[in-house]
Length: 407
Image 1: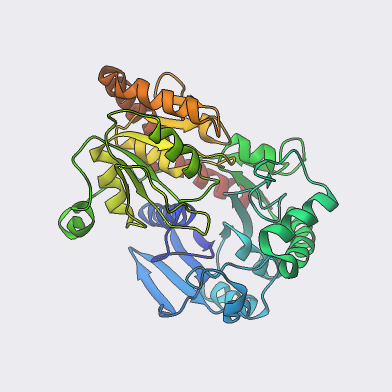
Image 2: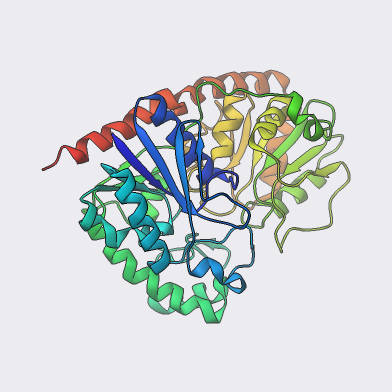
């Protein structure tokens, strides 16, 4: 089968969503499919390369040329409308690849929508966020999970999130293109039940399935090339947080909870800094910035507890299954898609989002009980087998087969 992945970022720009796209593409190649990725070209990147059998096309978009639109020059996101230059580039790729299935993963989808009738390819969209229903993709309102959309409410929220000049057009474009998306998509894939619910898929009449993200069955870690990173780590047995160092990820809550602990091991933070990342760190906290994925996996294996204190509705949480695959017990917020993964009292502990005391108490409980940590870690490793490529990817292949079999 010929499959074209549409993703705004690919290697070397890797976050949780991008890691999923790359891993899925590689796994599909292993299974005998012809797979290509069309993505946005960023400065210094090649127009085309082959990565483990996956052909990667990097395309220039008109909006990406306008650097002033982006707060992060290295991550120039796709707009919520078809980009004319990107549409032309995608048409060229589709003519060359002739895909049976186009599998889109974010707003770059909007530039492929005008081409679907012309190509007759079937369209699958994986929802890694809440973009089908929310223009900010976060489904948050005034620092808390949103209770539901409303015109004035959404206009106010998008204006605050993107700025007044970009907020209103972003909302209007996203609403219009979302209607087109609903009509064009053959199958939506939600990465968790919470993602399906908050995107309004349940009882919508739209075709969808809940299929989680996954980790490769064989995680090969080459320590030699990663030593410059790993030598920064403290002695094994530290607490570990991996993710964006933002308020929504609960970093402030975590630091306050950690400050309440006595004689705790070091707390290691690995992730991107943000404007709201605090510069005031309690004693024994090590902030290491962004790391390559392989280095992060090594760090999980040397930690004693994985911490995921998000206060927003995490659609899934790749760090959770990566920590469990490494045999680490997880303390995480009971929010979004996380309860789909963590079984409270069996593979880890779930706490109330934003509750400093409950997070601190959960950490202390596990620190004082090494037997419980060992039991949770082993149960988590077994639970993690359900999120391996050999289990999840065949379900995605079945989706491809089912939609291409329809007249």
